[in-house]
Length: 201
Image (cartoon, rainbow, N blue to C red; front, side, top):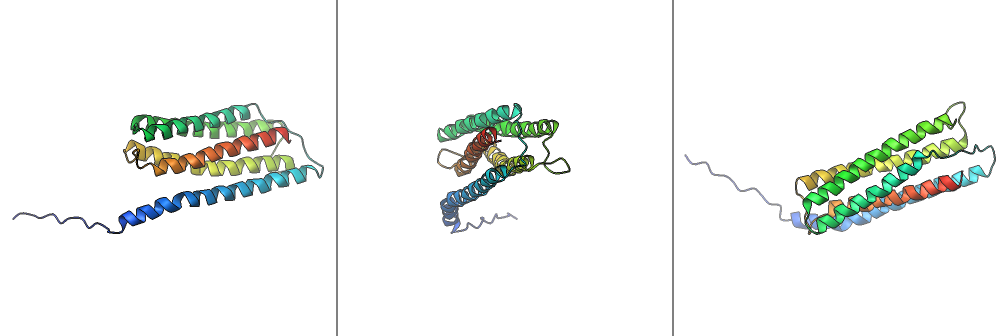
C-alpha cells in the first residue's frame, strides 16, 4: 500500500500578515525609543534640580567608564559592518559583525559592573546608610540604561541565530535593521549620559 503525503495547508493571508508586520515594526520601535528618551530626559532633569538643592556629593567617574564608552561606540561600528554586509548578501560577514557586536555588548556590561565597584571604593553607594542622592541618581540612570541594553542583547542573539541559519538576505533583513536601529540608539543614549554625568557631577 502506497502512503500518500498530504500537502501542507498554506495560509492564504500569510503574505498579508507578513507585510503588515513589516509596516508596523519600525513605528512601534520608534514609539518605544521615544518613551525611553522621555524617561531618561525626565531623570536627567530631576538630577539637575536635585543637585541645585544642596547636600550633593561630588564624585568622579571611574576611568573604566571611558573604556566602557569606547567599547559601545565600537560595537555600533561592527553592527554597521553587519548591516552593510547583508545588503551585499555576505552572510558570513553579517554573522561575524553580529557576533562581534554581541561580544562587545557583553564586554560593556562587564565594564559597567567594574565601574560600579570602583564607585563604591569612592564611597558612592546606591542605597543604604552612607548613600547620597548623587550616587543614587547615578546608579539608577546607569541601571535603566543597562536594562534597555538587555533588550538589545536579546535582539542581537536572535539576529545572530537567524543569520547563522541563513534566514536573512539582501531582500529580507528587517530583523537586523530593527536590531541596528535600537542598538545605535542605545549607543548614542549612553554617549549622552556619559557626557552628562562627566560634566555635571
